[in-house]
Length: 91
Image (cartoon, rainbow, N blue to C red; front, side, top):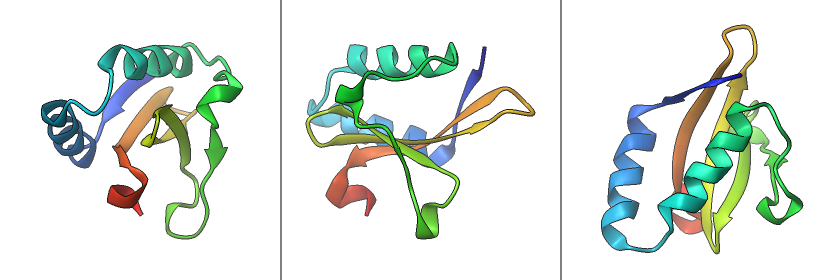
């Protein structure tokens, strides 16, 4: 089982998103729980690898245009929550 580790950027973006009311926190928590249990996300999350600047990270769709960028550090059993936001905010 992985332990979630939110980065500063993630925490900052999460607070901003929470204030905006654009997403459902329960859906985010569900996705994080699935990832921490080392299970595959449902295809509706559109989970995929990122390339270029974000090589080594993955992205999944939480709700609508809300994306979670994360990476798994297997040797430490850590799920690094890198950032969260809309596509235009992240890229």
